[in-house]
Length: 151
Length: 99
Image (cartoon, rainbow over all chains, first blue to last red; front, side, top):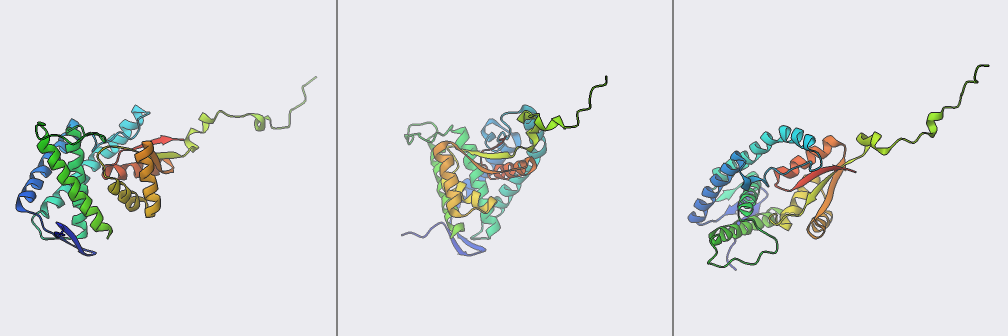
């Protein structure tokens, strides 16, 4: 079996072995995701979920209180993710930022693609095919990270 | 003739509508199913945020996945809001409602 792209070496050391093109792709995706989060675009709606569906007033109060800290949380995660993109060994904190950042990217991209749980695999003719391939890559990387952090 | 004073406290026999005690009812944090978050990720988040055992976290995750939603924590409103916010930090779709 080929060695994994990400492997836990110890509690605070994770080996990262990614192709430079994948690292570049992740850097680009990080910026796109951050732009959506900061703009509050429709693709970022899953980043800011509604907490009180039964009361507009309570929801307004909750949003007033949490919107900015939530945006800052995602910003900080994405910043730590990007600053560690070129490394070959990640710390536990960086791995946590990677898991969160990959999830943010999946939420934004998945929302933009209007993903459905029962959706069949897209064909290569689909205009969004590249987006689906990238989404699958993000899913794979996040899955590996979750598995490794629990090891 | 003056009416005799009623000494028995009648208030004991009045039943108040439950809405009057709305603030005493616990607030529930509900996590909803979505097509994006991985099952392993949701399980991991439940363990990490609430200290649940793997079994309990998996059980809740499966409830979310198969029934569409699950109550993951409950308590006073302030605690429910904090729990929902932490779930939002992790990108989970969490709402707050009262019992």
